Image (tube, rainbow, N blue to C red):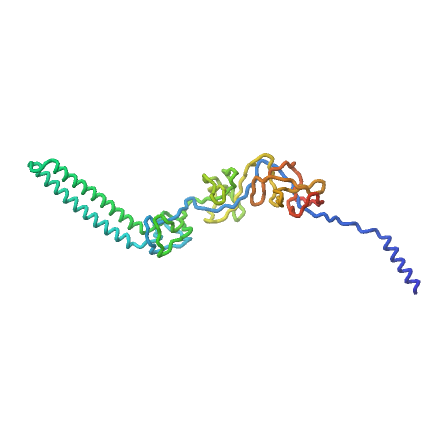
Length: 347
């Protein structure tokens, strides 16, 4: 029995020694790569907001306290529809004062005319001098000027009374309503934002150093592409974001998009400098030494410094002396080290 156990043990040792060692596995990480391409332009994708072509604040033309608010934000209104009313009591007092002044000035003018006629008769009979007649004539002209001023003040008071009612300037949509009953507002202070019916535009903001394209396209929620054309662009950069504001009108759109809707826009943008390349955003690495990308050379990752000239939501435009069709690492760059062996997984 002992001999059998020894024989079996020796057999197991011999078999174990005769087996070939297991091959070692390559532990180099996989990286996703892409062949970089140079070109004359890029497709820039930006977010735009649908606006009305005519969009303006609505305000009273006179100061006063809001008495009634007859509309809400989001309502569609017709031209001339009443939106707000002010308390008319202040203007009513102004109207009574203007009417009284107008009546008084008219009476003074009538008296001055009668006096001028009487003095003219006395002058014709030789009872008064020409100088005295001239003073009477001057008094009449002063009374007439006062009467004209009183009539103008009365007209202003009547207009102010009409201005106590704020009406819609045309057919359109109220985007926002801020005025509330009891609020005291100054003349010209906005109480609502009004979007006139009609043409719709897409508002887009571009980086400060790039030219604003004349043409582009929007991508609808259904995935359809519709052309847009530049309508206007701001004469100066936005003070807060330092970007260029531009508006594009819809060309042949089947249906007008809702105001305030967010639209995806695309533009063909020319290269801003020579030797520029378009790469995915994931290819950029900025770990403390400025922007750079990672290339694969002889199976190893090597960094390459670059200058970023333009960023979009998905891609970046860089300036670098990199040959076309070079393998560029586009995913996982934050884990790489110079000279690290990698395995390529091409897109």
